[in-house]
Length: 419
Image 1 (cartoon, one colour):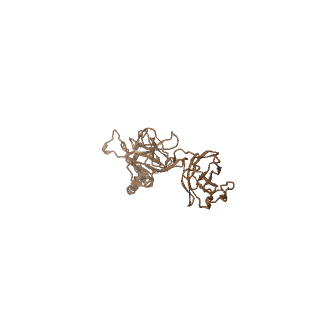
Image 2 (cartoon, one colour):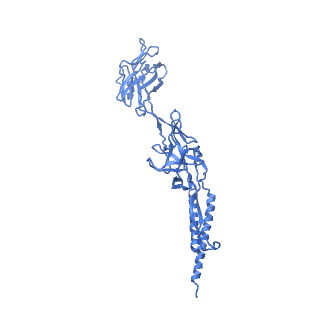
Image 3 (tube, rainbow, N blue to C red):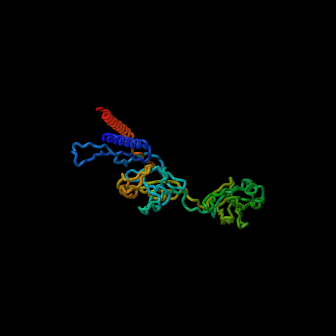
């Protein structure tokens, strides 16, 4: 019997060493919770034995307890690195399907995938409560994967351009690069067929910028008898050339440089639709040709300009120059019995019958911890303590091995007795 008692001590010491080694191995794992081996003595009672004469039968492992104490926080500067200061766990979804398991972790090193969802290194998706744009939580039951779109808004194609230019009358008498009046057949690649050109902003129906230029062709050059001048304006959008639907519509100026033509919209027809060009407030100058102002009604989707996560878990995104909007509030879960949680690795747990159902809430309310953006929770393992525990477990193992050896020698002595 003593043989099995010593053997149980060996098994217990080996378990203790294994748990301690696991703690040491994960000392750098974000959000890791250290374990502790717990043992109980084995004691059998016989109804006819004297309690004072009973001897224990060794030890057994009753469980591996998890230490859920708060780990230290380490600042990272990454807005999606999250930590909980206080009680609770981040809820994550283990897959993309609606029926994927909900798991819980304090490992908050998150990042954004190519499709815009927030995940950790294990590929688990961070979940949030749905919210209104102002951050008001819509309910505390349903959770969804947190998605951070890189763009927002509706793209619209350009349909009108506002362009004001200042055309030089001293640059080759207003001809600029143009060879003569009348000009040769207009060709965008031939600068001798137009006087001046300028790029203009233009968006297609997807909100993407496409190349577009306005070309000014001098049709009426100033002379001593008539100092007025006039330009026909050509538009080239993505290689497609268009002239005004009214051939007589020109950008004209009197002898004093005051604009007299193209004071209203000029209409151009393209394969993708009609474009209106407003050249009001243009002028002539004795300086170099320049653009005074340009604008258009096209609109691209606004890009993500800033991301912020508040202590209450609200995820605020700013697109372009618009006001910040809430993309959701990070869900925080708590349990009645933390020791009943089922570990699935990656410092992540599943609820079980022993732990009880999860209680979901928002950070900072009803006893839940607050969220700290830009930091992660380190493993709550004290390396010094673990090394001491390792030495103690090693000595316990050696002592049990010595007891086993002694029992073996006693058995050998009995076997060697000669009558």
